[in-house]
Length: 76
Image (cartoon, rainbow, N blue to C red; front, side, top):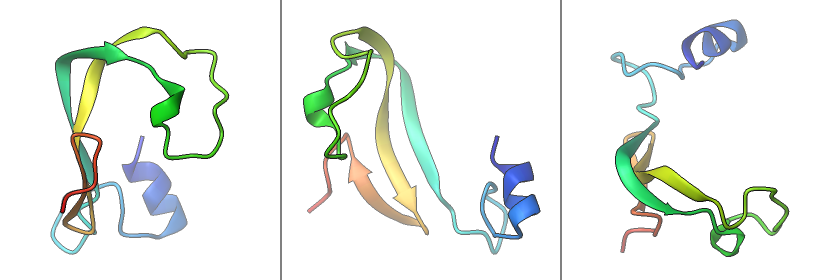
C-alpha cells in the first residue's frame, strides 16, 4: 500500500529504511471505540460511519520521525 506508490512517485516514503522519512502510525488493534465525526480534524462532518462501533485506535502518528499526534491529541 505504501512502498510501490512511493517508488512510482520517486519519494522517500513507504518504508522505515535508513534515509526514509519515518512516517508511521502505531495502532492498537484491540482498542474499541465509536466513530465520531465531531473528532475529525477536517472541517467536513460527512460520513456514513458516524456512530458505528469500531475496533482499533491510532495511538501515535509519527511524521519525519517526530510524534505529531498522541492518542488522538497533539503532544505538548
